[in-house]
Amino acid sequence: MINETYKAMLGGKSVIRTLSEYATARGKEIGYENVFDYSLGNPSVPCPPSFTKTVIDMYETAEPVVLHGYSPSLGLPGVRKVIADSLDRRFGMDYTLDHIFPTTGAAGALAHALRAVTEPGDEVITFAPYFPEYQPYVSGTGARLTVVPADTENFQINFDAFEQALNPGVTAVLINTPNNPSGAVYSAATLERLAGLLRDKQTEYGHDIFLISDEPYREIVFDGAEQPYPAKFYDNTLTCYSWSKSLSLPGERIGYVAVNPKATDAGLIVPMMGQISRGTGHNCPSSTMQLAVAKVIDETSDLSVYETNMNLLYDALTSIGFDVVRPGGTFYIFPRALEADANAFCMKAKDYDLILVPSDSFGVPGHFRMAYCVDTEKVKRSIPVLERFAHEVYG
Ligand code: PLP
Image 1 (tube, helix red, strand yellow):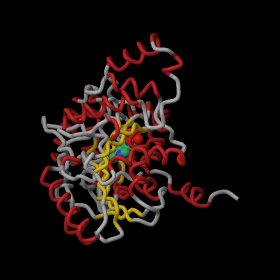
Image 2 (cartoon, protein in one colour):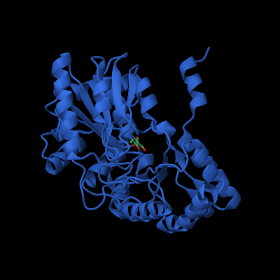
Image 3 (cartoon, helix red, strand yellow):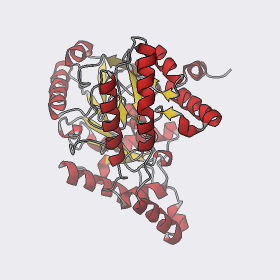
């Protein structure tokens, strides 16, 4: 007999992937340049040339046995030190290599962070709108995900709803800033208030509540602003990072967990993650990738196109009449749909070859997400089509 849980999950295929597959198929019919595919968060800018050069140099000059050999189960020590030093420099933290655990992207980081600080049956809270994969990420650990309704005014945290949701069964709170899908950047005031509330609740409940901070979009912030570093605000923080977006390497599967040195049992958590790996079969990212990202640690791709695209779309959407919160970062925008049923809205948009993702799987009704990691030229061509769609269908 095959596993019933995973079998049942086959029916709940990701809406985003389904739409992306549709866009690819439609592209074969009418030419992909004619499909305004805003479905998938796949970076559209190349990795920096320095990264490519680093990898080529390594392949040409490094000892193959070293380059392709097993990584130690906690990652390559020199690489972990480079990551710790960079975070310390940038955010005034006190990480050492003992607090860094290299992972296969943010997904691998979250898998380890969640398992390290929850037991099966525990409750993990996150805030809408949220990345839909959080459901399988959390349920796969045996914990339960509770979603706090959104603050649709500005997509910060709805603290009234959060306070109502908190209870002694909660052992972890999962945040994502800059946020997929809203593009919101949690402010220092939001993080301060969140930290204060979690500290109070830890005292009240008599146990730790860990903050798991998912930060793959950390460097994609607009208007010259910066994302305040969540671990700076709250000791019990596990920071999950990925180079998927900042270096445009989603296929390379490289990221890390950084354990705040002030967290409870901080010295045990990374070694425990080594044990978690044994059960999940994760077993460290590739040695080549660990070495390569360490060599370009403070670099990013040229991320400026995302801000250009955001401004074009934000201006166009507001002038068409959409109600939209201006994103502070990422490459997503999350406007209110022109009818209450976001699925119906996105189905109608498909007739105009506009591929928009309905908001329901992000935990918010009546909105849609556009992933504008596409060529600016295509964004510009899509604007009259958006206008035509809105006027013809919704008057
Ligand atoms: N978390 C968020 C909010 C994301 O948007 C993504 C990917 O899009 C991930 C995690 C997974 O990142 P990775 O591809 O690095 O595993």
